[in-house]
Amino acid sequence: MKPLIWIIDDEWESYAIETKVIQEAFPNAEIVVSGRSYREDAEKYAESADAVLVQVSMQLDAPLIARLEKCKIISVYGVGYDNVDVDAATAKGIAVANVPGYCTEDVSDYVIAAIYHCNKTLLAYAKSCRGGAWGAMAAKHLIHRIAGSKLLIIGLGRIGGAVAAKAKAMRMEVLCYDPYVSPEQAQAMGVKAVSLEDGLAQADYVSLNMRLAEETKGFLSTEAFRQMKPTAYLINASRGGTVDEAALIEAVQSGEIAGACLDVLCEEPPKPDNPMLHTDGIFVTPHISYLTQSSLDELQRTAAANAVAFLRGEPVASVVNPEAGEKKD
Image (cartoon, rainbow, N blue to C red; front, side, top):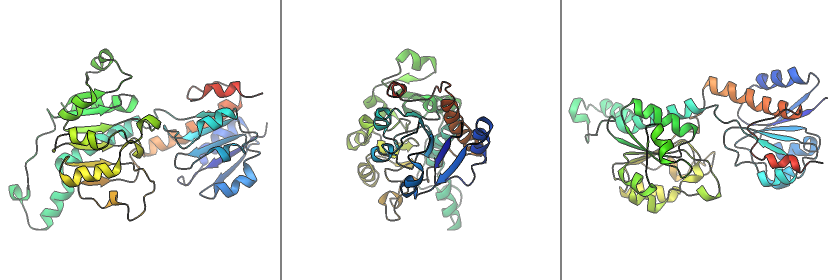
């Protein structure tokens, strides 16, 4: 077999890991790479590609998927796969696989770092120090210590569970809202299950850890922010679309909440004049919470391995649409 593997990506500098994985299984495989011109490149590769590896920022919509005549699997570089029209892929008989768990430690570390960032405000203190302030005179307001404060985790999956374990080690009181996790399951993790309303009202920090789906778009909006403490912070390292950004800006500017630390936005990359980048109290990082050398290596290796295994007829546990196999002749 001499498969054509089409990599659609605009982030990685090297594909040595993918090449090694693919060529160990298929020595004669052809590997082609497209960046942001991938829609133009579809004229060359779409009809003959046996597998597609795609970055989460690159959209595979129904018209493009319709052109994938030979493709058996779309392997996404990430946990989320909302960039792929899964219904269109399923109708075409194309499996879609993701890479769950590869960045659990890294994203949960980011959430903990964001808690410290909001609590200790080191950048602000460094700035005031340069302005001559020192000691207690540098503190515009006193804060409560992290130990004993309350963290609400919305979505107690792999990442949410890792955040909970680390927060408990910091002696925080951890609450969770997740309709798919029973109170008994949460209790076994040392976490108290609460309603969304109760959790928002109690929390000093709210960590959003949920995938983007139709039912989670704008999950946190005006009403949710009104239920939060004026001293509370929002942390989002999941998907930007789960937050109503206009409502968040209004909540921060009006003092309904203290601020937010975000690694994701609705529009990525954002335009330079995006108000999310210019609102005091909202701290934005460029979607890097998952990124370490360890996570990147694992992500590239597993995404390639998923494609290879599927082409060899082997089971791939992370296929999100197993019914696609029923569509193939």
